[in-house]
Image (tube, rainbow over all chains, first blue to last red; front, top):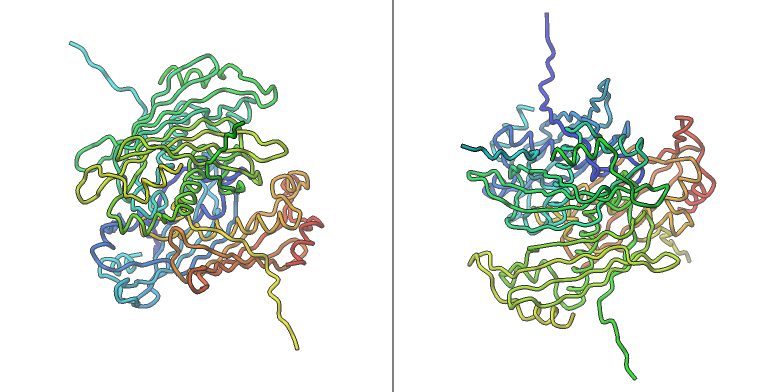
Length: 141
Length: 141
Length: 141
Length: 141
């Protein structure tokens, strides 16, 4: 007997007027912003606060790539659940997969987003290893 | 003996990177967006969903004025409590007062925001009375 | 004989989908963002680049207050002219008045916005005099 | 003798404080917003105004996918040139490739973005052929 348990972190969010545009639905770039909020919350849940952590560590991990598939429109008031699944790529980099689920009467997948992050030293101007707390967060994902 | 109880609706919110600008703190216009989120949540708590409600009622209540006092900077990860206090102005209009409190070690008032809203019929192109559920929300504020 | 010449700086801007919300018109907080763009352009025209200038001068001039009157809705594609008029308040502070004009068949005033800025030393944690280039910009307004 | 002429539409834009976040550079999702501005301007240059066109045509062309490669950070005041190159995919869909160039002392490629758009009838809830003016814009790209 065997269980497969989805360990992904979940972030809950309501769609706001500010997220939408004149087409009546969430503006495409704001799907990415909402996923970044989920990423920030997931890091904080892992003991990493983006602001102070990166200031102290002397390392930044900017986003090198993003991809998004927009499957369903999202409207003001829609309740969302966004799952966050990090994955190690190299010793310097990781990806994060996000799924945005719309929690109306029936839960439906509304978008898939993926980002790639590369740890960089602004001083050395080169890639560096992930700081250990961040590596731990990635590997727990 | 006497209690004065603050009945204001409270909305909780974490500051996100997307809220900030290159000065490292929340961009001044985003204080207003965060208050509008609190307004949307307060209306929903009163049984009014902005989107469907206004479509059905044939009435819109655009913001006619806003005012803000920025008292303290807000940084990514700061926890906020935003209070929402509506007040009737005329039979067609109301104001909403917001206070943004930063919930770090000590709670501190970070901003005061005030908006004025006027009920309007897009078809008649004139001011109209507040729909009863909205009037009830204002008067319960 | 006499001329009254409007010396205000003018900034031109097209309304974008990203500026609007599900009500089909520019989101109220984005009127302020558009005025801040005009402010940035007006400073640059006066030889002041916000980013490098404030880093070098050791002074920041955060916005202490804002006020806005929303007179007309703005839709995607609308052409705007935003006038920028600074005014000295004290040796530490100034206000900026903005008027957003919609340039359709007939030019119409769509909003009035006013901000107040206070020069501050982050190190000294107190108000300081405006750096001379900024004082010159204010007084030329 | 032979010329290769880049026929891509170019959109010029200055980076604003509102585009950036507390890391001091443009927030990753705002690269996509800036490309959408360029797309709106390119359509308008082809005689298509997003708002009125899609209302009249009974067709919407939401974005189904986006991809971005972030090559260089962008700071407030940076001047940008964004090129817009549409390409037909099927009779119902097209892609748009964007390149964001930073126009400092030397022009450098700062990001590549690609979007996919699918013409849809909200009434029929199915894919439909591109309206002829939009097909003409795609084919001229």
